[in-house]
Image (cartoon, rainbow over all chains, first blue to last red; front, side, top):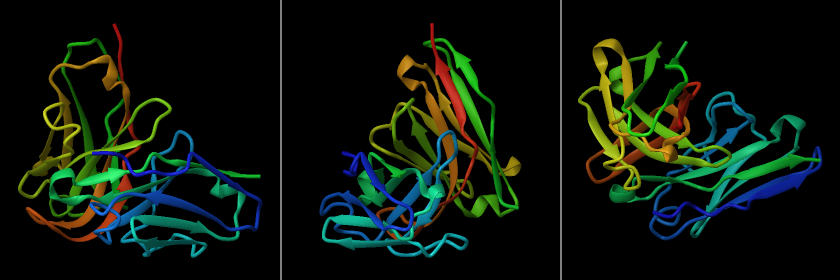
Length: 111
Length: 127
């Protein structure tokens, strides 16, 4: 199964907002409300930031929010901070045959 | 504290077998799925498969079916990822993670994501 499509990189200045897109198909993102987002700093394990499209785990800043429209999911980070600089991955359920699939990842640079 | 602790780094030759482990603590190990994720050098995350330690129900991504074996021993709260014959292309960091999801044979009722991760195990396959 193909990975979900994310931009390779995005950037923003401290205090600004950025949005990372995650484009799938009607077989995954467009068909299930089971999209999650992970943050990964270099050399570290990923961290869950968003699950079921819009929900934040306990302890995750409310500066992080998720949404979907059609076959595309989005992660928005508002009030950018230096510590947000990391790689971000989306992940979607894709049915009982393909199970789950990750996006290719997006490198966020805080200028 | 909920924790997943993985076994240490491995250096192997092509054709050799290998098993890496992921030990859970601080929660009911049998009641949560454990997932495995691959990250090749400089690359993104790849979803490999999951296991429910309570009954060893296992599901594989089509990309990894037949390439690896996922197992678990609930009596010692440990999950495993196994290769019977390694290839150079298996060189990667492998993560285990607790998966909070309601996974039925042909559907999913809820998916709260991979909320606790192991530290990763680096596997290097080189001749």
